[in-house]
Amino acid sequence: MMEPGVSEDMTTRESRGAHRRKTGILVHGYNLHAGQWEDVTWGTPPERIGRVPMGVLVAQSEQADVMVFGSGASEKDGLLESEAATRLLWERFDELAGFAVFKGWETELTRPPAASRFRQRIESILHLDRTSKNTRDEIAHAGRVFIDRDVERVILVSSPTHLPRCLRDACAIYGEDGDLSGLLRELYAAPSITGYPGYTAEDVAIFEPPHRPDRPGGVDSRVGANRRTVKDHPDRPVRPDRPDHPGADLSRVVARAHDIPENQRERFIRRLDDLLQEFEA
Image 1: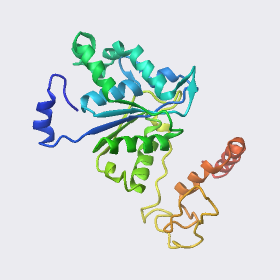
Image 2: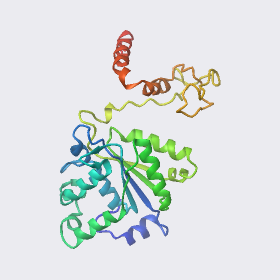
Image 3: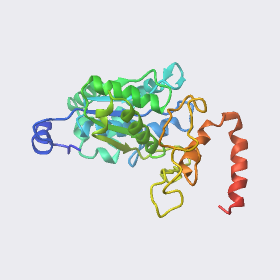
């Protein structure tokens, strides 16, 4: 990140070489009807920085060329998520200096005319996503914005309880779309401190596909057997290298839970809890 007081010319010459790679930031939206929306989105100075201030910090430190605010997934008081986040940013812009991570930027944030230039710069790179309905949509939408603006470096910003999935989805989406595949070359993630109320990063469950031969399910000799078809799951691409029989592959079993209808999930969780108790887990 660029240090306060160091000019972009110095950063370009000394750290980035002759070619300055354009940078794009995606600040993921947070459902407007979710718990503690403003706390998650903004945070509490000096230490609990939220998604929006973290996006501003990364954008300024990395001299970003575009910053996308997501999304259009929810609406409240006539504003979509991206619009509400933007309004919050301008309403509390003068409070950015209260976050410890902005130490060294006090002049740029609080004293005219530097503060006005700082705000104008953020305004000039801000792009509001008003159409996306979920995380994957946000990533794809931002990817198209980045490609249109010749972005080469992508930085995702979200809560630590959300960001692992964002990075996974970005790797998948940009990897599957040839037009966006160049964005994989430099794909980074910057977590805020704030997360889903009552949860931390430790509550995020991650199940990697089996890959170690010294563990059960590490090598599946039945690859090719009982393959899933489009008819089974028309909303998912068929992967011929993945058999339907899960063996000891917890990652695929857990992923299927997303297919359970909302009105049946509580019953499923009760039965799953009973099963886990049976196995003393």
